[in-house]
Amino acid sequence: MIKMRDIIREGNHTLRAEAKQVKFPLSEADQKLANDMMEYLENSQDPELAKKYGLRAGVGLAAPQVDVSEQMAAVLVPSENEDDEPVFKDVIINPVIISHSVQPGALTEGEGCLSVDRDIAGYVIRHDRITLRYYNMAGEEKKIRLKNYPAIVCQHEIDHLHGILFYDHINGDNPFAADDDLVLIS
Image (cartoon, rainbow, N blue to C red; front, side):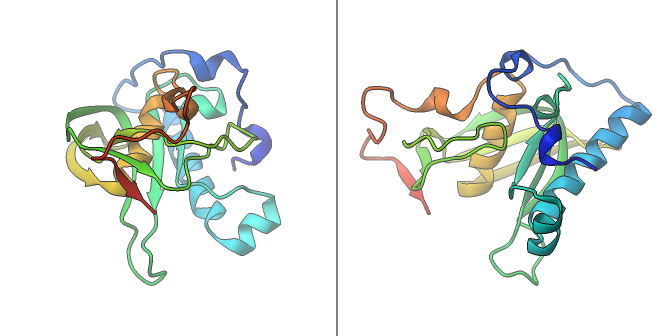
Protein backbone atom coordinates (compact mmCIF):
# COMPACT_ATOMS: atom_id res chain seq x y z
CA MET A 1 0.00 0.00 0.00
CA ILE A 2 1.29 3.44 -0.95
CA LYS A 3 1.50 5.92 1.92
CA MET A 4 2.58 9.56 2.07
CA ARG A 5 6.17 8.56 2.85
CA ASP A 6 6.30 6.78 -0.54
CA ILE A 7 5.40 9.94 -2.47
CA ILE A 8 8.46 11.92 -3.50
CA ARG A 9 8.52 15.68 -3.09
CA GLU A 10 9.54 18.57 -5.30
CA GLY A 11 13.29 18.69 -5.68
CA ASN A 12 13.52 14.99 -6.57
CA HIS A 13 14.85 14.68 -10.14
CA THR A 14 12.24 12.06 -11.14
CA LEU A 15 9.52 14.73 -10.94
CA ARG A 16 11.33 16.79 -13.61
CA ALA A 17 12.17 13.92 -15.97
CA GLU A 18 10.36 12.76 -19.09
CA ALA A 19 8.81 9.42 -18.14
CA LYS A 20 9.23 6.44 -20.44
CA GLN A 21 6.38 4.75 -22.26
CA VAL A 22 4.91 1.64 -20.67
CA LYS A 23 5.08 -1.63 -22.63
CA PHE A 24 2.26 -4.14 -22.92
CA PRO A 25 1.37 -6.59 -21.65
CA LEU A 26 1.97 -4.97 -18.28
CA SER A 27 4.63 -6.56 -16.13
CA GLU A 28 3.60 -7.79 -12.69
CA ALA A 29 5.41 -4.79 -11.20
CA ASP A 30 3.45 -2.36 -13.41
CA GLN A 31 0.15 -4.08 -12.59
CA LYS A 32 0.92 -3.82 -8.88
CA LEU A 33 1.93 -0.17 -9.23
CA ALA A 34 -1.29 0.67 -11.09
CA ASN A 35 -3.43 -1.09 -8.48
CA ASP A 36 -1.50 0.48 -5.60
CA MET A 37 -1.86 3.99 -7.03
CA MET A 38 -5.63 3.56 -7.42
CA GLU A 39 -5.84 2.09 -3.92
CA TYR A 40 -4.08 5.19 -2.56
CA LEU A 41 -6.69 7.43 -4.20
CA GLU A 42 -9.59 5.33 -2.93
CA ASN A 43 -8.17 5.26 0.60
CA SER A 44 -7.32 8.97 0.56
CA GLN A 45 -10.91 9.84 -0.31
CA ASP A 46 -12.28 7.77 2.58
CA PRO A 47 -12.08 10.01 5.67
CA GLU A 48 -11.60 7.10 8.11
CA LEU A 49 -8.85 5.39 6.08
CA ALA A 50 -7.17 8.70 5.27
CA LYS A 51 -6.97 9.50 8.97
CA LYS A 52 -5.87 5.98 9.93
CA TYR A 53 -2.98 5.97 7.41
CA GLY A 54 -2.18 9.70 7.44
CA LEU A 55 -3.04 10.19 3.76
CA ARG A 56 -3.57 13.52 2.03
CA ALA A 57 -6.64 13.41 -0.19
CA GLY A 58 -5.95 13.07 -3.88
CA VAL A 59 -7.79 12.68 -7.17
CA GLY A 60 -4.72 11.70 -9.18
CA LEU A 61 -1.38 10.02 -8.62
CA ALA A 62 1.25 9.60 -11.33
CA ALA A 63 3.98 6.95 -11.33
CA PRO A 64 6.78 9.57 -11.21
CA GLN A 65 5.34 10.73 -7.87
CA VAL A 66 6.28 7.36 -6.39
CA ASP A 67 9.71 7.54 -8.07
CA VAL A 68 8.82 5.33 -11.05
CA SER A 69 9.57 7.13 -14.30
CA GLU A 70 6.80 5.58 -16.41
CA GLN A 71 3.84 7.08 -18.26
CA MET A 72 1.12 5.83 -15.95
CA ALA A 73 -1.28 7.63 -13.61
CA ALA A 74 -4.31 6.70 -11.55
CA VAL A 75 -7.23 9.14 -11.69
CA LEU A 76 -10.28 9.04 -9.43
CA VAL A 77 -12.60 12.03 -9.72
CA PRO A 78 -15.51 11.40 -7.35
CA SER A 79 -19.09 12.41 -7.99
CA GLU A 80 -20.49 15.26 -5.93
CA ASN A 81 -23.06 12.77 -4.60
CA GLU A 82 -21.31 10.05 -2.57
CA ASP A 83 -23.75 7.38 -3.76
CA ASP A 84 -23.05 7.97 -7.47
CA GLU A 85 -20.32 6.42 -9.57
CA PRO A 86 -17.13 8.47 -9.91
CA VAL A 87 -17.07 11.04 -12.70
CA PHE A 88 -13.87 9.41 -13.98
CA LYS A 89 -11.92 6.46 -12.60
CA ASP A 90 -9.16 4.66 -14.46
CA VAL A 91 -5.45 4.08 -14.69
CA ILE A 92 -4.30 6.01 -17.74
CA ILE A 93 -1.25 4.54 -19.44
CA ASN A 94 0.75 6.32 -22.17
CA PRO A 95 -1.89 9.09 -22.27
CA VAL A 96 -1.98 11.68 -25.04
CA ILE A 97 -4.24 14.70 -25.37
CA ILE A 98 -5.29 14.42 -29.01
CA SER A 99 -7.42 17.57 -29.09
CA HIS A 100 -8.38 20.40 -26.78
CA SER A 101 -10.52 23.48 -26.58
CA VAL A 102 -9.15 26.90 -27.34
CA GLN A 103 -10.97 28.12 -24.24
CA PRO A 104 -8.78 28.05 -21.14
CA GLY A 105 -9.90 26.79 -17.76
CA ALA A 106 -8.57 27.00 -14.22
CA LEU A 107 -9.66 26.07 -10.73
CA THR A 108 -10.84 29.08 -8.74
CA GLU A 109 -8.87 28.02 -5.67
CA GLY A 110 -5.82 26.91 -7.66
CA GLU A 111 -4.27 23.45 -7.69
CA GLY A 112 -2.39 21.37 -5.18
CA CYS A 113 -0.19 18.33 -5.47
CA LEU A 114 0.76 15.41 -3.26
CA SER A 115 4.40 16.06 -4.20
CA VAL A 116 4.28 19.74 -3.20
CA ASP A 117 4.10 20.45 0.53
CA ARG A 118 3.28 24.13 0.25
CA ASP A 119 0.42 26.28 -0.95
CA ILE A 120 1.12 28.12 -4.18
CA ALA A 121 -1.48 30.72 -5.07
CA GLY A 122 -2.49 31.47 -8.64
CA TYR A 123 -4.49 30.30 -11.60
CA VAL A 124 -3.08 27.20 -13.28
CA ILE A 125 -4.21 27.90 -16.84
CA ARG A 126 -5.14 24.73 -18.73
CA HIS A 127 -7.58 23.67 -21.46
CA ASP A 128 -11.21 23.60 -20.36
CA ARG A 129 -11.97 20.56 -22.56
CA ILE A 130 -9.76 17.77 -23.82
CA THR A 131 -10.00 14.55 -25.78
CA LEU A 132 -7.74 11.99 -24.17
CA ARG A 133 -6.37 8.82 -25.73
CA TYR A 134 -4.80 6.30 -23.38
CA TYR A 135 -4.47 2.60 -22.68
CA ASN A 136 -6.05 0.89 -19.70
CA MET A 137 -4.42 -1.89 -17.68
CA ALA A 138 -5.70 -4.52 -20.12
CA GLY A 139 -3.91 -2.74 -22.96
CA GLU A 140 -7.15 -1.54 -24.54
CA GLU A 141 -7.02 1.83 -26.27
CA LYS A 142 -9.55 4.29 -24.86
CA LYS A 143 -10.64 7.69 -26.06
CA ILE A 144 -12.65 9.99 -23.82
CA ARG A 145 -13.79 13.61 -23.86
CA LEU A 146 -13.46 15.44 -20.58
CA LYS A 147 -14.37 18.94 -19.50
CA ASN A 148 -13.95 21.18 -16.49
CA TYR A 149 -12.59 19.51 -13.34
CA PRO A 150 -11.91 16.01 -14.78
CA ALA A 151 -10.06 17.63 -17.71
CA ILE A 152 -7.97 19.71 -15.30
CA VAL A 153 -7.11 16.64 -13.20
CA CYS A 154 -6.00 14.60 -16.21
CA GLN A 155 -3.86 17.46 -17.55
CA HIS A 156 -2.22 17.79 -14.12
CA GLU A 157 -1.37 14.07 -14.07
CA ILE A 158 -0.16 14.05 -17.68
CA ASP A 159 2.13 16.97 -16.83
CA HIS A 160 3.79 14.75 -14.20
CA LEU A 161 4.68 12.30 -16.97
CA HIS A 162 6.56 15.08 -18.77
CA GLY A 163 8.42 16.61 -15.83
CA ILE A 164 6.03 19.53 -15.37
CA LEU A 165 4.63 20.66 -12.02
CA PHE A 166 1.39 22.62 -11.72
CA TYR A 167 3.05 25.85 -10.62
CA ASP A 168 5.02 25.96 -13.89
CA HIS A 169 1.73 27.17 -15.45
CA ILE A 170 1.21 30.07 -13.01
CA ASN A 171 2.06 33.57 -14.24
CA GLY A 172 5.04 34.58 -12.09
CA ASP A 173 4.38 38.32 -12.46
CA ASN A 174 0.64 38.18 -11.81
CA PRO A 175 -0.52 34.80 -10.43
CA PHE A 176 -4.19 35.63 -10.89
CA ALA A 177 -3.87 37.09 -14.40
CA ALA A 178 -6.66 35.83 -16.62
CA ASP A 179 -8.06 36.51 -20.05
CA ASP A 180 -11.75 37.34 -20.30
CA ASP A 181 -12.55 33.92 -21.76
CA LEU A 182 -11.06 31.95 -18.84
CA VAL A 183 -13.54 29.44 -17.41
CA LEU A 184 -13.14 29.44 -13.63
CA ILE A 185 -14.14 26.12 -12.09
CA SER A 186 -15.09 26.00 -8.43
